[in-house]
Length: 336
View 1 (cartoon, one colour):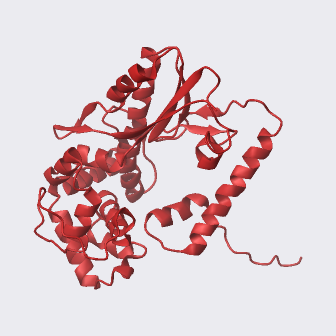
View 2: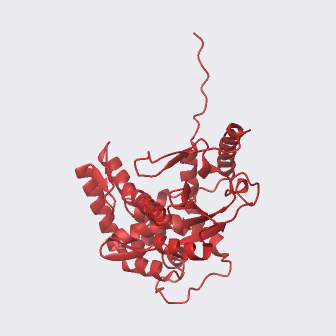
View 3: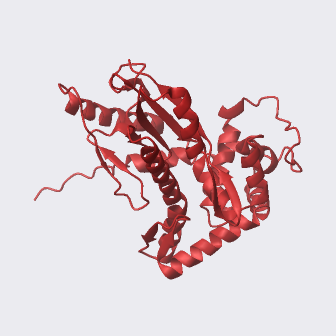
């Protein structure tokens, strides 16, 4: 029999997106992700050809409690296919849509579980930006003695939210504090070498960052131990997930569930409250950390929006006696 030629293994979209989110800086990676997204969108659009209306299949099938939306994959649609650009997805005549997106909710959720005072205060105040603060005080250490309320002294070449050093600081916070085993996690962060910092310097700064967050480290260690031992994880709202596989896998999946599952629980609670308060409303899209809800024009926008915002952004006691608010960005969409 002829020997089949060896072909390269295709890396899936999830893994490519994970590499990008971890800080991998590659034009080829970005182009590959764009190609995958566009090809998936092309297939969805082809299936919709000739149809006046489609009804996506929505199922809460993921272990974390997240919803899956398919046929078509509405969450994956590029923004240009929404209201203002093409009118493919738009409110029906006689209704308007309210959209919100939680801001950095997974980082806030971790802080709410753990309760480290500096992070709680940074999130409470909303200024300075937590990733700016992390970059300036810990990762780059331009102001190692920086305190909340001090004026941040940025370098002359700082370009704001798009600055690469801020992006690395964001990845540093998630990779080292939230999901890493210890300070050595910083060494595996894609692109960290671009900062020009020596290996020992990176380890030292990661260690200082963790030392300043003893409650976060303790929460993560306790969660790992419980998940490895009990083979089950629960969100602060009680959603249970059974854990399988080797201990390290159970620990990682258990912590992910406490964070991501709690976000899913919070979104479910919000949507239930909205539909009970306004039975005339309908859920258009649940995208895990944001949602889109339709209201009839008979419900005044200036009255409904503040009430929905109060529901979505209410405070919660997640753990450690910490009360946390999960703010969102808001957008009202009118029909075309």
